Image (cartoon, rainbow, N blue to C red; front, side, top):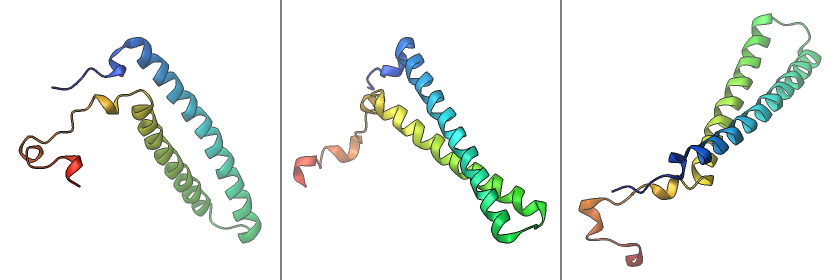
Length: 103
């Protein structure tokens, strides 16, 4: 039987999601800064190249930073709220033969 998650409480959940949105806004600002810096450096080093090159680089940097940051933010949200501790991670068939003290 799983224990109740702290995210089941609406007050805790609202606080956690507000913090996550704040982190994502900061990440979006950092991503825009990095993309602008990368575009400037690419223009200085390469000059006028196809506009598709700049679009691809901007989308690639943006997608990578926002996806990675979003997933890491969710991992921090899950751990920081105590949601991870509420998960029952026992395997019924295996736990009767093994325990952490056996290692």
